Length: 332
Image 1 (cartoon, rainbow, N blue to C red):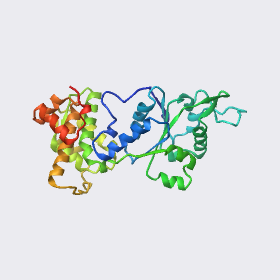
Image 2: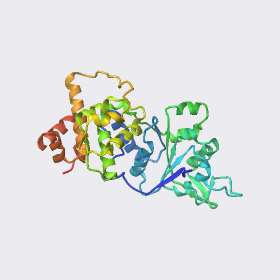
Image 3: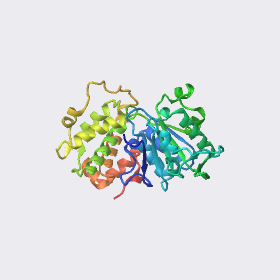
Image 4: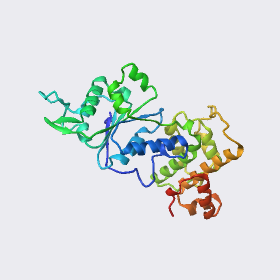
């Protein structure tokens, strides 16, 4: 059985590639999430990430750690794993004073001092472990080998939208929940941010080609439109699986609709279309999403993006400003 606790090295933002794909996009929903994470990074309160199945919540927590406590350890904990209490707290110390929680020096709480503990699926954490974590969060101290030591730990947790019912039915302790949800962030599903799907898919394709040392590829306009029309109930995990398949299919150049069809589930109804504004507004939204996707694919290099778009570079600068695409990410 894999170790339910994973350490990550002390790093800042995730890499030169920018935000984790879960946070990529220009929709109001994901922009609000990024802004909230940035504000929360300056403090030390708990953070609760609410997400549907298939969202890459751990990557969001890891990037948040990079914003706030990059010099210290990041420890991810699967709350439903066997022996999670032993991994978190170590072996109990006999005759330890009762004033503070006592943990062993080789446990994960000790390893995470000053850093971040990410609790994945908090609703699965056993009640006794919840009680000990709540006490550590309240006291800000533990005993390690008998000596009181400040923890400086920041708790970040993930949960489903049913977490409020879990609290009401006492599956999640109220005091622990209040500390975790000091900052509550609902990660929007892909179905609520369809305009971001082309940008995310392009980023996933770029990442996959780089990881496998494959030739750089890009989606056609029509292929991106098809991806944006689907509902993606499996969220980022489902979209990533599709991108992985087409990235490794052995062909070069552009990814066409015919490359996507064999790996897509098309037996679902498309996401319902909700008219919003006049035709001109809808055209501007699509233009903004497509230009952003092309810029993302070319690493925000204006010359290369302008060539793909078939326009002059000065015109691309002007378009980006008109459409509200942040120029701060663009470098030559």
